[in-house]
Length: 312
Image (cartoon, rainbow, N blue to C red; front, side, top):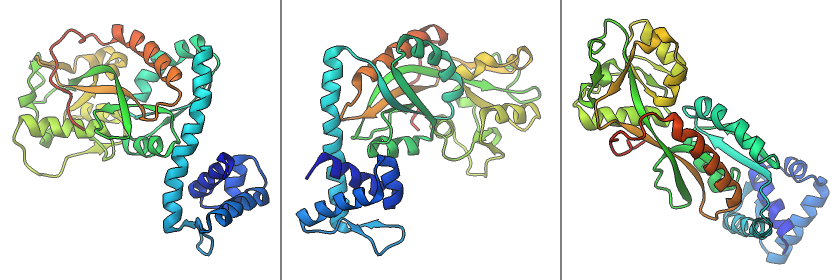
């Protein structure tokens, strides 16, 4: 049994196709198939049910793949040990970022990070929290930036910052005349929300549920982007809540619709998350250092009393 054979098994399990797996591993399909067959012969079991289309894992195959993933990840740790010993920060690093953080945070730190660590090849994807958890667990992401806490035993979290919520209230809304608002003023029945699947949406809903009675009426409108929520609000269709960093790019006219909360301010916890195996920690720590130093001056509410992070 070799690490290479286990790597090939993981590739087939992921792609459910020998040809695609071989392409990913940069070997010929016969070479990959032969090595997997040798492993199956050695173990005297079938890892894959080749009669199914697409190919499926057998019952024992699923258990082997779970263990193979652990072994392959641990084999990568040897190179990590060497890199850390040499003080080397480089190589490919796959980073996921949730949609409500990506457009505001990424432009703030990316150029600085690339300049400071030119040997790191970042591959960045915008993903939902659910997708991020799945890909970190499967080893397809090295780390991610997401709203926490996640309470997942396989994932570790390093808090980067607490981002306050800011209300966006258009003219003619019942709360527009208030200079500041209280959480108890919120009502889901006139709240514009992101579509299902966004953790920021869940935070807003939980905030309203915790601090105010509400009905179970169907929400008025939902959208896939915060920018669309602002436009809908400007049309008088309701108010919405924004993450603080999104308010920094709002034009002067729309800033008149921003209303901050009385203290304690509701906020979300944003963290750098990664697998408990702690691979590529030198890059994770470098990311944390760059983001934390930049964000420290951007969050104007850093000294304000904040409500415990709103659960997702």
